[in-house]
Structure formats: C-alpha cells, structure tokens
Image (cartoon, rainbow over all chains, first blue to last red; front, side, top):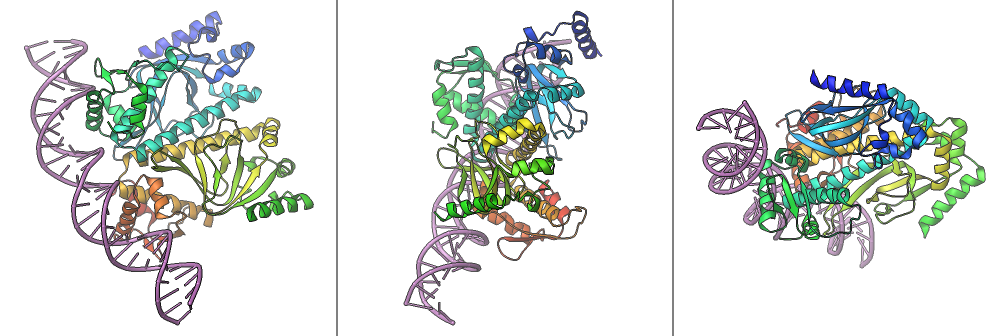
Length: 254
Length: 254
DNA sequence: CGGGTCATTGAACCATATCAAGTCCTGTGG
DNA sequence: CCACAGGACTTGATATGGTTCAATGACCCG
C-alpha cells in the first residue's frame, strides 16, 4: 500500500541521516516535547517517526489495545464516540501540537479520524515510557495536557447542555477564529477582522455541536444575514467583529 | 464560625496523637494515595487535614487562585459551570475516593459545591508538590485520574449531545446503580435488583443532564409507570432489572 | 455533460421548554 | 396534636426550537 511506503521511506531517511528533525519541527515550541532540552530532544527524536494519514483514515480505533502516543504535526483529527444505533458525537478535536493518545495500557473508547490530510509524529510507546521515567517533567507535561483537554471537554459540556443552536455555532466559530488569530500573529490584541476556513464539513460540525446538518446550515445563514459573519465559499469565513460574535456565543440577541 | 472550629479541632487531634489516620481511612484502597506504601503514607498523612463542608457550601470557587488538592472521603461534590445569564451545567460529580482539585497554579473555571455533607482530606499544596517530586508514582496516579475524568466527561458529551430525555435519565440512573452495586459487594456480576438513593435534587439532575426539572420529573414518572424503576420516596430508587434500564439508556423503546 | 457529494431551503412535526397550578413532604410554632 | 409555611416535586396546557423529510441548488471531477 502506498501509504506504508511513504511512511517507511520517511523512517529510513531519518535513520540514514541520523537527523533529529526536531530542530525544524513546525510545532516544536508548542508540543509537549518543548519541555525537553536539546540533548533530551535528540533522545526523543531517536524513537519517533512521522506518519501521514489521508482524509477519513482511522488513526485510533475504539478497539485498539496497543498504546499509541504522538504529536499532531499538521492537519486536524476528530475524536468521536458513537451510540450503538449510529448516532455520533465528536468529543474533541486535535490540532497541530496537540497530543494524540495516552501513556497507559487502558485506552479510551474513542475513534480518532483524520479530517483532511494529517501528519503525526508517532513515539515508540515502550521507549517513550522509559523516557518518561527518566525525565519526569514529561509526565508533568502530559498531565497538564490532559487537564487542558478536560477543561475543553467541560466547556463543551456547557455548550451541549445549555446553549441553543445559534449560540453553539457562534461559539464554534469564535473558537476557530481565536485559534487562527493566535497562529497568524502572536499578539492577540488585534481586533480587526479574522478570516479562516472551516476544517470540518457541515456533518462534522453538526456532530461536534450536537445538532443536525440542516440546523447548522440554517444558523450559519442566519449569522450571515445578520452580518455577524461573511463568506467567500461555504468553507471560508470572515469575522468582521469578533467581539460581536463572542457576544452572540453567550446569548446576545441578533 | 462553627465550621472552622470543627476543622481546627480535627487538625489538632491528629497532630496531638500523631496518628496518620490513613490506616482507618474509608477510601484508602481506592484513592490516589493507594499507590504509596506504609512508610510513604505516613509522610502523606503529615501534610493532610480533614475538613467537613455543609450542604450547599462552596468548596472551590471559580475565582480561586490558590492551589487546592485533596481526596473526597464522604459525600458528593458537584462541579458546575455557569453561563453569564445564569444557565448552569454540572460538568462532573465527585464521589468518595475521587480527587478534588489539581496540582498546578492555573486552576479550572468551575465551582465545586457540596451536595449534602462532605468530608475532604485536604493536602497541603506546597508540600504535596514536594512529595510528588519525591515519588513520581504519585504524578502518574494523578495523570491516570485526570484521564479517567476526561473519559467520563466525553461519555457525558455523548449523552448531552445525542441522547433524548428518557435515555439521559436512564443513563444517569444506571450510573448510580452500578456505583452503588460496586460499593455494596465487590462482585459486580450480581444481576438481582439494585436499590440506592439519589444524591441530587431534581434541579441538580436537570443541570447534570441538560434538561429542565419538569422534564426530569416527567421522565422519571414514565420510567416508573413502565416498570423500569420503582420508588419508595422521591429520592429512593429500586431498579428491578438493570439490564433493561441499561437497554433504555441506549435507546431501547419502552 | 452527467453523476456524485455537499450544502441550502422549505414545510410539517414533535420533543422539550415554558408557564402555571397543584400536591406532597417536612419542620416549626402555637 | 394541629395549623401552616416553605420548599421540593409533580402534573397539565401551551409554545417553540430543532428535527425530520423532501426538494433544490452549487460545485467538482471524470
């Protein structure tokens, strides 16, 4: 299979040149590994390899029992849980620099699926475990990541349990807008307009917000005609006034 | 204030007799501290004190910036988040042996409120931090706890986003039934009837499930008339057939 | 151009919210 | 012991936001 080939070639190239690659890593300043110094980084690089996943590919399966740990380099991963009758809920999104998987045998009952093309820096689980024993600061970093994920999950619980459709959409767009603003220029204070494109399809947005695609579509249309957002195509959003959208995310009327 | 007195007396009694108390602790086999051996337990005991909170008391405030860490000894704590207009969502429940708080400066934006009377084994944050450095296994235990909480939060996201009112109530009751079954006798296989009493008021259940109190009441009535549950009083539940309730939690029709 | 996927729009329906009584329970004071 | 006040819960009537079903439109790719 072509994928396996790409993966293997990458791996061999790294081995051959004995190049940590970490120095040129896009997310080196944001991922968990940032807590390591240069020497430690080389140790980490020795046990990693990059893998590319194609859109829609399953990265982590619910039934998976082998330990998977890595860092997202590029692309977006959706974490989903399903009910037995097929209803589905996205329980989290992983963006570049986020941690994929966890360092323990007992894995979570979620699917991790590539949205668009995804590049992962995968750690050798056994060796990463040893590294954690050696550098406890890694464990601390993982703990902090987990707490951040927990906080996002709880934030989302409020959204799912207590917000109406318009607030849900507005909240989602604000989240993406802030994220893109942060990546674009590190000063967040800039309050001019923000432009970004939706990483998710309408169906995925619906699964993320606990809605149907029709409702998602209608509410986006509503926001558009209210002037809270502007759109080039169905995936390209411009937020002229983030404050206003933020207000609508918290229940402000149109 | 009376509370302060009780708290202080407890603390002094412990200091006076230099008694770890851990040996007689109700939750010693389930809390994070179970990863410590006898000698380490004594070190831990030296930096803890027990505090009693009365029903409705705030244990952790959203604005709190001092580190709070401890173990729930008895009672139930609700973790809530609120929207600015007053809508409220319970994002988690802490039962005996669960960890309260987290070991880092940046705290979560949630309230922790005592439901009924609550007893906490509170750790001195600074000294507990030192203990963690000394015994990394503690950090690992906290990490695992955080992952478990994350898993519950995600489970709950599916409930909030994708289940209807009846399924929500059934799921909630199943959760409590399993918990009480587990505490009662450690063999879980027993599939006879389970009896327990609701730790939460209708209003709290509503806030937990993303519903209104009226809907909660109606759905409980529905389950009762369908014979899926039985009730002594409005707080005392008997589940004659857990399998059946479980099925309803997953969408089975009445 | 035709077929496929994704997104939008419309109309009808229904589950849950909302508003409004009413009932049960519990503790308190006469 | 009764009266009764207040909170917690239940029940009923109505409204409504979001789903469901169905049709249409936009875009992409062979």
